[in-house]
Length: 326
Image (cartoon, rainbow, N blue to C red; front, side):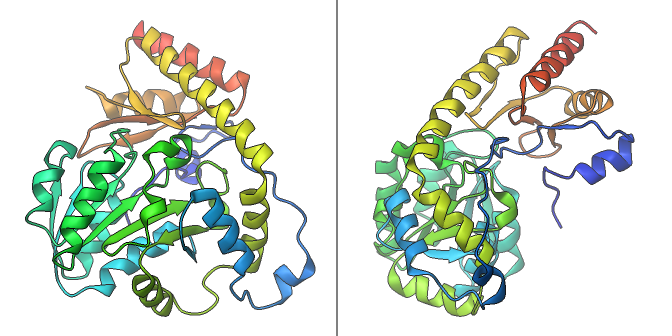
């Protein structure tokens, strides 16, 4: 399997500490407070809940959505719904996309964001992470919709992964996900800080959603996940307060990195930069009990999520100061 952030057991095994600050993911460190669940959530088979779909459609502005066990489930399943195709995946970006398409007999190539427009003309499927993880690069919605139209005209797909889209809703094309050729992925794991639920949503044309549902099979999303997500998606007060708090926290992180000579890009939930010595930087922070995300290959660099509290911010600031003065 590919390497990902959030692997604190690996951190403890390698470095032997138990006081970690986990900045290795872009997950909101102040996640939605999960409510007490009714017994039925645990005891009944988790049949699809129309109320959950309605709440998700209202939140994301989509015409229809299919709940899935995290967008990772959809990422792994979508390549199985097409015959071998010419597929272009944005790079560097979330590596599971390229990994999944390559495993199922598709002809894969990677393209920088600046090359994606040209790749649309010679591809049957184009996959874009918007905003991008890890670099924060974006593509304007109008351009994405134009790409989707050109791909659909020849039976192709544009897959837009909006897992980090909650902090910049103007980027989303979820409202158009019912049109042929456009597939949109959304996650409750990042903004809502509920990665453990393993719940996401897919927006697409009805035939595509039906085929994906058939492939994933019955009871794809657990009852507890549906119950918690339903409340989170309806809680507009928490959503507004969290959106504002994350904007402030993201600006603070950007300013902190700037102060220490690091010109980073990203989203309010994470920041990334190309680092001349990424392994050394990663190892240095690990010695101080700060676990960041190391990118060794494409897009060699470092990604930092948000500290959970003020002591975490202070530890990070001291670590950056010592790194600069080493």
